[in-house]
Amino acid sequence: MKLLVAVEGVALSRAITDTLERAGHVVTTVEPALAGTFGSAVTDALRDDENAPFDAIIVDTPQALATASSVTPHVRSLLLATTSSPAPEHSPDATLRMPFSDTELLAYVEMLSRESNGLGARSMIIRGDLTLDLANRKAYFASTHRPMPLSRLEYDVLEALVKANGRFVDLDELQRGIGGSFTGEELIRNALYTLDRKLRRAGLNLNRHDDSFRVM
Image (cartoon, rainbow, N blue to C red):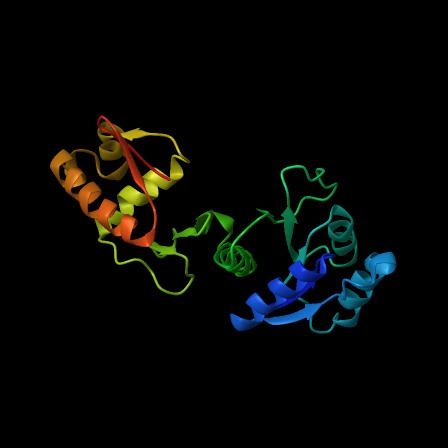
């Protein structure tokens, strides 16, 4: 993807640029040192590339987001924000909470790429370093290129638990959500057992409370 990074923090801007370039993206960076004229610099960068527009812009302030939205409203935007960041006047296509890992950043950029290609954000779920590719039914941890070696049923169980967003899910709910009467309870128990071993190898925890489970 062709990306514009408009992040005011020098260290963060360099780290993001390095990560994206190592992943094969073409990156233009607005110089963070232009603090007093940052908005103008973002505008200039966007207008300089009108003939070869950016696929997405990464910003860390509502002001830069507003500038990007006014100059090129059709360019996808990713806002880097903290829990205390003010709500932006213009809504970004995605918001990534700081601090974040390289894997999270690349997963969000991939999500924006899918939006541009018509697949939409709903084709992916991102939870920290864990990414679910709903369209291709693959799970990734600490990588956006090497899928976890999961069986069909293991993936179904993991997707159901991730969609629960930290809530405990009991066996009955898993059975109804995955395959109804066609997926027996014993099959789901076996899938939970083998999935737990694979998640632990990846550094994730499958928590259990009686006959209810959640992924942390």
